[in-house]
Structure formats: structure tokens, C-alpha cells
Image (cartoon, rainbow, N blue to C red; front, side, top):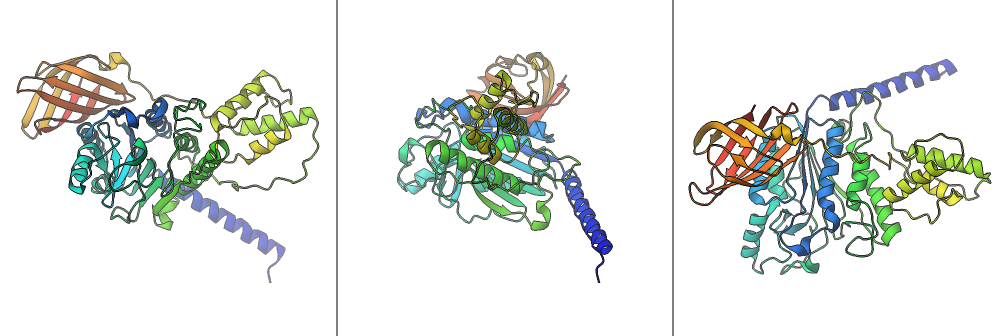
Length: 485
């Protein structure tokens, strides 16, 4: 017979074991390195593919920032105007950082298309119309896009513990002869060989549906002030929540995006998931910050709201609204029930970031219910730009060494950036040198051996004293290079 003391002892023991299991899971999650490749293609050569307001570029900036804040070991951001050669150079530099047993996350925001059983992520030189014949279309795609299957297979060669892809692109169905609607969209995924255990693919929208760039009825997105696409703004917010399991993050973001799109423009966008992570390992997979605290527990996405509203005096109502705005990260003032400028600013901040239009700056029962229904993490996340290495940190003389297919080369180079010139072993002019966070990318053009173009991509050490990366050129030569002070 169970006595009251026996029950209490059993409950305490079970609770202790549960907490121990959760803490072990968080500890396990910090036992491997987390590395991310972030892609946001914006500078499409074909103007028909332009994304309003450069939102895909900003997606990459904000996701990179969130992952840096979450203390990822490596965050490499692909240049937004990358062509195929530039992308490959950056990918190879990223692969050099990945070791067996790591967690690898790839985020992509841009246009895509499904062809011949594979998904292609479109780079700078993509066009809104593809050749008619199957052979010509295949050749065109291989020159301007990245195969999702090929990308994942290349990453798997490094034997990571987890591989997570987040694809923020449309999945509306395209006709077999041409891409419809003047835009390239990603079609329904096939059952590809890339789906294997320890792999998770998060799609911003379900098969056959679009992913919206903004919550506005016009193509220019003139009424939506957010600099990010609809899916990414919610993703970035969720990435700030400590110890939120990846699957819970997907469900939370999916629910929020579906509600945003439905309430704002009356359309449907439903996220989808290909999850091949064994159940026993799911508690180790966190995309956001990992701390020693117990894992985040999601509240019910559809809480019950009383049908009969309680009658509140004005000050009590204002106080309750302040509490909800504080919970959502929007209100920093005193919880006093006095509805002043700081409270109005907090409400305006929430409305801007969640795309709600309340029609009034004053507290109301409808407003309070809306805030109560807004579950999950903070909505008013501070827009943190990635850390920029100061221009002075990259300008000047560097010792250069490389190991190339054609041989080994050493010497010194002089770099003037972030947009400037490179002079060194072969004098030439740099058309575009960019420094973002700890990523350094540039294109070196010279005529010593005919018209040759080099594509450099590297990662600057946190102390700013060294750079490691890879380069390729139009002659087919490939190198692993290093720069040092």
C-alpha cells in the first residue's frame, strides 16, 4: 500500500530524475562544436528576381547575428551577390572548419527551383526563365545554382553529429517548360538520398505554397516596415531562447508565421519539417543559446481565453498590458499601471515587430487578449548587427602563404578594404573587398596570365591577426591560403 509519504517520495524522486535528464541533455549539447553557413542571396543579375528591400540579404545578417550571440564556434556568411565560383570558395573554407562529430547548420534565404528530383538554391546569376529542353535546363542550373542534395552530401563527408538545413524559399509548383510568375520557386521535395538519420530540414513553407517576403498586399512591401522576410523575423526571435529544442523551435516559428500571414494578408504559409533525428538525440539538438538551466518548456500554443471578460478598472488593465509587454521583451519601464509615453512606445514596438494593427495606442481588453495569446519567446528582440572587424584591422601588409593545385606560393600582400585594392605577388586591382563580421571576401582581377579572376573567401581570427580560407580562379586553380600579421 502506498502511504502519503511514499507517494511524496516517489514524486520527488521522479522529478529529480527528470531534471537530471534535462540537465544532462543540455550538457551533452555543449559537448560538440556548432558551426553555421549562412546564405542570403540578394544581388540577382535578373531584376525580375529582386526581393523587395533586400530582405534576403538582411535575413542572413540577422541570422548570423543570432548565431554569434548563441555562441556558435563558427559562423560563415556567404556574400549576398555570390555566383557559383564564389559560393564554392566560401563553402570550401567553411568545410575546412568542420570536424567529425560537429553540429552543422545551413540557413538559406533566396529563390529556388525543383528539377529532376533535386532542389536547387539559386545564386546571383540565376534567371527567371530557364531553357526549354531538359538537358539545357540541367546545364543552366548547374552553372547558376547549388544542388541541395550535393550540398548535404558534401557536408556529410565531414561526418557531423547533426546536420540541419533551414530553407526559406517558395515551394509553389513550376511548369516543366518555364518558371511561372517571373520568379523562381522551390517545388515539393522528393524523397532524396539526403534524408538520413541525424538530419533535419526545416522548410519555411509547405509543399505547393509560397513563402512571403512581407506582410503587405503590394509587391513592393511598402506597408511592412520589417527589414526581414516573414519567416526569418520569427526565426531570429526564436533563436534567442535558451535551451529550446530544435523541433519545438520549428513548431513555434511555424505557428507564429501561419498566424501572421493569415491575420495580415489573408494568405496561407505553413512551415514543414523533414526530421530524421533519432528520438534519443533530439534532446541534444538546440539551435539557439545553450545554458546550464533546464530546457525551455513551450506553453500551449492555443490557451483558453475566458468567454466572459473580467471587468477591470483602467489602471489595472494598463498594468496587465504592461506585464504582457514586459514578458514579450517590449516594455522596460515600471509596472505601475500608468499608461504614458514609454508604454505607448512599447506597444508600438510590439505592433511593428508582430505586424499587428491595433488602431489605438491605449490599453483595451482586446489588446490584452492578443498579448496573452502571443506565446513563445521575446518578440521585441534587439536588432544586433554582426560584429564588424574594423577597416584598420584588415588594411596593411600581410604575410601570404598558399598551397595550390599548381604549387605553393609565399610572399606579402597589401590589403586596403573593405572596398579597395590588393597589391602583392601579382599586382592587380580588387573590384570588391568586403568585410562582414569575421568574414573576408574579395575578387582579384589581373592580366599577368591573360584575363584571370581570383575569388577569395576567408575567416578573420577574433584577434584580427590572421586569416584562413580558400581561393579559386578562372584557370581552374584552387588554393588554401593563410594571411598573418
